Image (cartoon, rainbow, N blue to C red):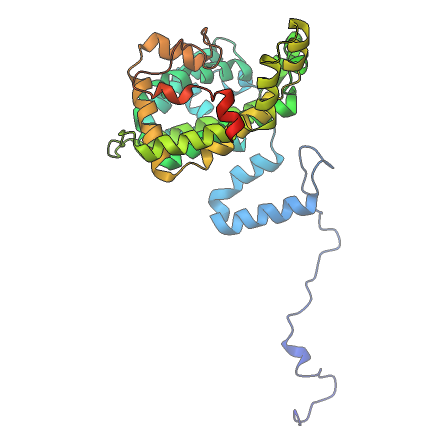
Length: 361
């Protein structure tokens, strides 16, 4: 195939289709991207991640947030609110009180679903910040506020059915994983951990695993409350199939290694010291996860009815008793703040199997 005649000095015609090579000035300055913690994250990965976000969200809108996320510093609260009045401080804290992924997700869910509650929380945060509180002090305000938010929204959360039931199980599983990771799950490990006040203080500081878990749990509860706000009332008629499903789950739990060890230790007839030593070896995290696993496998309808019945019963409690339970205060060893199961709950399901029942299994 011929491309025709070419004059002297003309290049190959296919080669002419390529764009000309860029010409750079000799003295042009070289721009360099900096990160807050050089070496802690691969810069090539950061550049790729930033590029993806910019392309997907739009360069003009996404650039400030992305640059702050990857290259900016978390400013101290005193710097964030310096020279601001209350209204200005609320606006600043809406952006910078908790400028991480978990914190932003929680604040965004609250603002979009419950704007008045969002404004109330920002007011509390602004007052604390303007009085000299740091970010950890603001976290304490969020913790107190969350109890006041969840209590009146329990009926709405209960209307989310089996999905809401499973999400609460996820929160419980996450709490157990956090205990397992940070403290350990036997009596000896827990006592040693709690004996050092610095452990508890560090576990709930900004950016810690405890902080991240708390924000994720709060975001789930806010989203559930929004989902169930306008949902129809849940069914609360406890059926025979529900009783059978719960009894099956109960016997399955009792066959768990940790529960078997607990029953053996408590009914062995040995002296107190021997029983106490055996009980201290029980892994409460494994025990709790065994319960969660069995509850997760309940039928869809049983979850829905059990969840609706439970949240309705909790909603009928006196406000001060409910707040005690939410804050972890109380005297009942299994459920803080409650001395008996909620009214209307089928209490016979809480009774343990007899020795004959266990032998027959």
